[in-house]
Image (cartoon, rainbow, N blue to C red; front, top):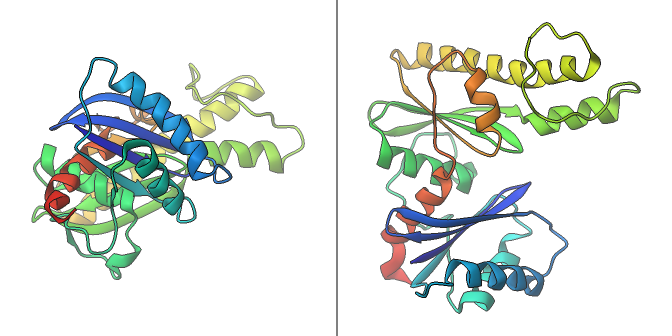
Length: 257
């Protein structure tokens, strides 16, 4: 089994993966003030739950988009598992054909998502990741990663409305019954949920127009279950897409560690 950690700006996903099967997943808050020992203590507690029926980890792998937290998590993984993690980044084999201007700028999360998507679906593929930011990336029919678009995430937009206005409250991110809402809370929810869904639909249309053909549509991320059902396009949801990508990347690189 593999111990996989995907660190985003808001949450860290920790998975126990056996082959291509994700057996357990835990999510914790991203906190850049925690030390490697604090994270190690959390991971040890999670590992005890993961392995309560026996077994052990043969390897570990890390993806992180929080640079100052990456070495902390590397140390905490090694402290809690005794295994030095494979870190997704420069020099790691992914099998991904990257067509952006500077491949070094491509985030580890987007790499993992693309690797997993190409393992599950035939290209062309458009991947939507609804995290702290909403990212939309396109893979053409030749499996080449072309690039994409970045939108403010729903939670960022909600926080901005509440903090930058005098009379608008913080609200739960849920879809109201109607787009034309009749009270302040539901009006905000309408704008956040339906607005993000409409933006996703619009960018899909523009991406497919630039590609010149229809693409397989795939979504992941914490808010995908809220936003994607309100899109007009048919979009598959893969909640653990990045962890699946981490497992594939570990397989490609395990002989080097």
